[in-house]
Amino acid sequence: MRVFSTDHLEVPLPAGHRFPMSKYRRLRERLVEAGVLRASELVRAPAAPLDRIGAVHDPAYVRAFIAGNLSREAVRRIGFPWSPALVDRTLGSVGGTLAAARVALDEGFAGNLAGGTHHAHRDFGSGYCVFNDLAVTARTLLDERAVERVAVVDLDVHQGDGTATLCAGDERVFTLSVHGARNFPSRKQTSDLDLGLADGTGDQEYLELVEAALDRVFDGARPQLVLYQAGVDPLAEDRLGRLALTLDGLAARDALVFERCRAEGAAVVATLGGGYADPLEPTLAAHEGTYRAARSVFDRG
Image (cartoon, rainbow, N blue to C red; front, side, top):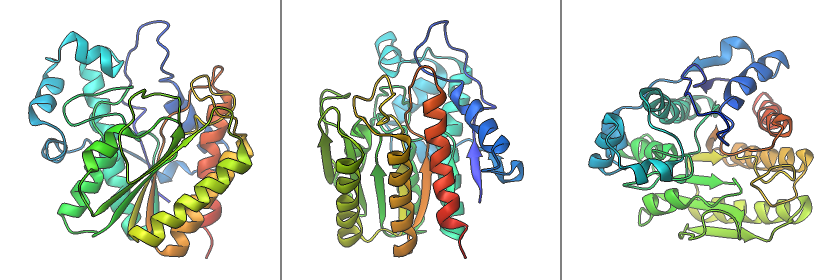
């Protein structure tokens, strides 16, 4: 198993900032200490090529972000103060997903301990997302003809609005988003399949809906590659989630996705997505569960 990490690319944030930047380092350390991953399986994520990002995003937006020339409003919408360190981390986050996808096509599974930046649109960032690693990876591998069909399976509690708009009209990419109906973003976009959940949705209803949604993804789109946005913010303890999943429920969700991909012969990349519990322990435990599920499924002979 190969998993890409970006926590060596640290981004300084103001005191009291609500984004849990420490979770990336803490998760990597936790996965190794718990024996879920070996240190030798972790790879520092490479920077994504700017031309591949510019094939999906407005080149003027890409240049402005790289140079630190975004407007104050554009920076506020992203949610992070601009810095050269943020540029490096952003390119690594996209590069990690792209690199993981190339590995997954050879090995069946790979992961990125970052990514899932599904709120990034063509010419603006939003919700802690600058560039959309899912859309960039899908477009790159399709343009290279490494694959013919890709599915984005987005199970973060927040709708993958940027991914929906960036992939709209491309019949080679199927976008699924299962999210809180009343959660961010307030203005939803149109994925190929959207399932909006009521506040307080729990394990049983959620898992039944995800299983049915996966049927539609695989029966209709027949993807060769699945880009899995494995956000753990549906967890009951998440301060931004509003759903009521347990750790066991999230682990079962991850296993559903991985088992179905393996059964269908589709390569799968796990991206980290959201997770905002405070204190952070439930979020870290849930992300660990994603990789335990991957081990259980993909380490079988």
